[in-house]
Length: 192
Image 1 (cartoon, rainbow, N blue to C red):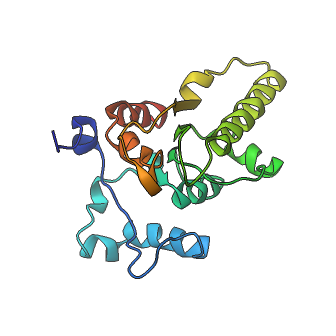
Image 2 (image 1 turned 135 degrees about the horizontal axis):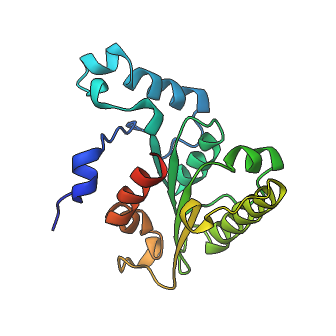
């Protein structure tokens, strides 16, 4: 339909840094991206056209795709974001325990396609497994029952849902995630 889902257009302000002349933000200092967010929420951001008065600073969510997915997970450890959506996550390592502890209360929804030719789906598989294990351990230690289905969601596709081919086959799940209207109602529900 080429229109934003109602939950997005009625409840969200999308703020995205522009990477003029750069193929990625991955090499940027994390503090620079957090400073951009601070600017966007300031009087200067409002003067630039951002509706600061309509933004609930306690309900800021983040969306990261490809390199930005790994960056989004890293930035989520700052606890400045209420929920995170990542698509085509590509970090091949294991998250440190401190990062997992910091992510324990952050709802995360992951999207990845098994035929991704850029980042292997095992990267997202490992992320989700680590997050779920860490949250299960934390819930058991606190003797609480946590709804992992709301806190950690994973849409894992066998084939690129957008039908992309060639050098980007399987890597188009950022498009799929962004047009999945359920992510917007989910972000609203977990950040309330």
